[in-house]
Structure formats: structure tokens, C-alpha cells
Image (cartoon, rainbow, N blue to C red; front, side, top):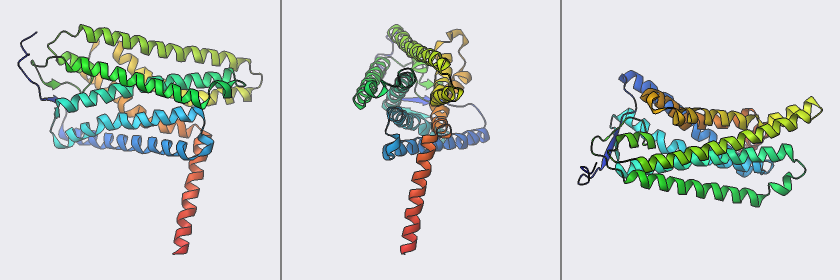
Length: 318
């Protein structure tokens, strides 16, 4: 266990895909498209929420937070993966690896806490609509955002420091397309009991967040059932539909990946599940919240018309 103490690891080797060159090019094109859509879509959401007054509400404040984190999420992982595919250089320096790891952990945690806060927002909006302006105030929103950002940063620092102290001498090849906790633990020749205990605590926190979201929706459904008009029921449920879809998209692959038995580990399966919540979900979120949301669509049309009128006026003056 201590045979590595004199060895200083300066770099790792990522092995994202074992396939033909043609397939790698197709994967590159696919993920370049995913990355572009994720960044552009989430930036549009951020711009709309920040500039359109009708979207200055708690729900869209948390949506803006989610989009900001998702831009960081995909930008932390996908550019390096795309670079590896196109150049064939699988090297990632030790420091770069742990910077990537720290941002991944931060974004993963922040997404969970933001989705939990959004569930609470929907719960108060539907179950206590008269008290909503008094409970979900601007101060409360900023306090919650500050709290979960600090919590995410602390969690990221703890995990990164724990893993950076491990010894890596038996191999420097990471069987994954980015620096992630479990592959790095498997790669290490050190005792990883402390990290496994920390991961267990992390799983408990994730389970707690998911439980809170489920309880919120049980209360929401019980309240919606009591609404007499079907139109009122539909309106209440439609205000939650985008959030429900995002929760299912995010928590589904994450839970399956991190809570399955180690005996069922498969590199290909882990990579597919990781791609879902690291790349695909951040890409889908803007579409989920725009295509199913009249406020966002209306704000987008209004901004597009405003920009179009300005361009037409400039061309006319010329």
C-alpha cells in the first residue's frame, strides 16, 4: 500500500471509447452537437430570465441557477472529451484531472439542491397559494441559493482533497471519459474506506433530497385532487410538469449508477449513464422548460420581435 509513496503522478490517461475511428468521428459530431445545444439553450434561458421582467419570479430564479450550473457542468467535461476524440491525445494532467473532478462534484450537488428548492417552490405555490408571496420572498430565494452553493463547494473540496491524497502507482489509465470519483478510487492502490464512508453519507443526502421532492409531490397531488374544476387541476399540474420531467431525467440515471451493487459494474453501462446526466440532461433542460412553458415561450417571442424590430430600424436608417 505504501510502495507508491516515492512515486509522483503527474498525469492520467482517459480511455473514453474503445471503437473504430469512424465511430469515434460520429461520436465527436454527436457530442459536439449536444455540447452546443446545451450551452446555447441554457444561455438563452439565463438571458431571458435576467432581462424579461415577467420572469423575475422565484421559479425562474431557480431555473436560471440550474441553467448556469448546467453550462459549467457540460463545459467542464465535454470539451476535454471532444479534444481526446479528435486529437487522440488521452493525457490529462494531475491538476487538470482534479479541477475537472471538483467542478463535476460541485455541479452534481448543486443540481440536486436546486431541484429540491424548485420542488419546495412548487409545493408552496400550489398548497399555500395565498401565503406564497410571504414565504417565497426574494430574500428567501437568495438565502437558499447561497446556502446550497456553499454546501456544494464544501462537498466538492472535501471529496477532491480526499481523492487527491490517494496513491496512484499501479496504473494511470482511467477507464472513463472524465475524472470521476469511482474510477479514480478503483485506480488507486490506497485504502479508500474514508472515501467510501463519505460517499455513503453523500448517498444519504441525495436520498434525503429525493424523499423531500417525493413528499412535496404527494402533498401537491393531494391538494390538486381537492380542486373542483378540471381546468384548475390541469393548470396546477402543468406548472409542475417541467420540473417533474427534469427530476426523472436527472435522478433516474444517477440513482441507478451510484446505488447498484459493485458486482454489476460495467464500463460501457457506466459511461452511458454518465453521459445521460452529464451531457444529455443539461441539453434537454432548456427544451423541457421552454417547449412546455408559455411564459418562457412568450418571453422568447417578445425578445425575438424586439431584436427583429431593432435590426429592421437600423437597416431602414442606413
